[in-house]
Image (cartoon, rainbow, N blue to C red; front, top):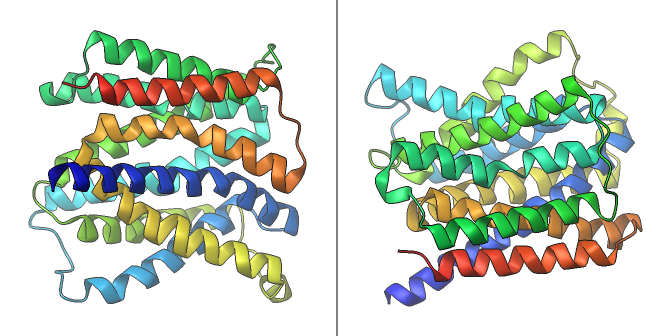
Length: 295
């Protein structure tokens, strides 16, 4: 039963990362339709919060202490508003390849951070080796045959902040999951994510063109991002992190650029190079052997 359960959790992680890889394409479609990144985040998290509320009616509204509530607030910021804001603003100042490369370094940052805080989350030398192989493969996929990165200090710094905030989100969930259910934590993340994005509308006003929201392509992508990529995937991902451990779960994020590469090729007709395919193979190899050599 334990093996079967483990297999189901790994399958869940794979499905979630696949969906998250597609979200880059979905977000790009919405931006091209006239929505700002802050609009997209607000709508997807608001929809996710509305969806999760009926499932959590029997749960309490607040945590057991002010300290825990502050940790949940930080989780909403790190896993929601700040993460998406820094990532999307970085794209306006830096090149997509730079941002993708830095943001997708999250698994390595998470491994280092969690290893410092929790002995049971530390990985052995063989796992570290194959994690580095997956990281190298991810670089080949992101660069897709282009070996020169044009530095943009502000954009690259924001992308690095995005990677660090997701690593911190993983740590916060690790701290909280021993006291609260994943359903409770996920609902709080959505709530505080929506709440903390509101001040941004002072700088970037919410898109008020009602006709824009009734376009079929906008409706479909908002529903996809809100219900599937946020409501279902965040809830599922928190379960995955609790079941596998944060470090093992986060290694699946290396697959994100592979899915994005395939989705971009199919939906946006973007070019795929042989080196990118080699990188994809390295990622799959790295993830498999990190799991194979686990303690």
